[in-house]
Length: 125
Image (cartoon, rainbow, N blue to C red; front, side, top):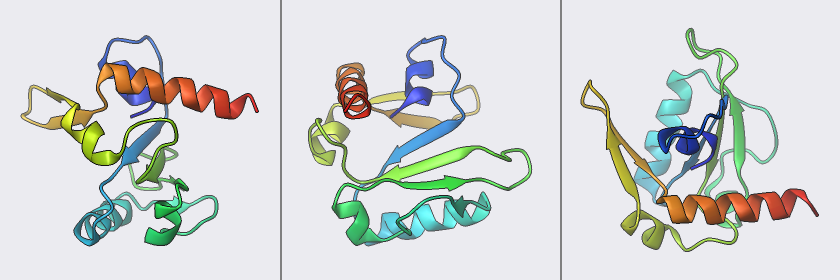
């Protein structure tokens, strides 16, 4: 939903951060935790991976250590300020596939633009 989503839409932007917005459900937390474990992701800032912190709108930041993704940052959140709720974002999402059959669900371009505007406004404060 961040810089990587911009690249999917054709932006000439390079980002070493992958942002994930996940639906706040126990099964998704288990899957996300398993993926972070496989990536040997180490938390680089507070708070720890906690559903309550995510529910308050905090992002949780990790740095990957697994071979091939060393140094890649992963940010996880369940809420984003200034955009619709997850259910609405998911309904409006764009889905892309690659030559290997992988599927990528991204914010719609309109939601991505809104998220970027809100992010820029937060940084400017």
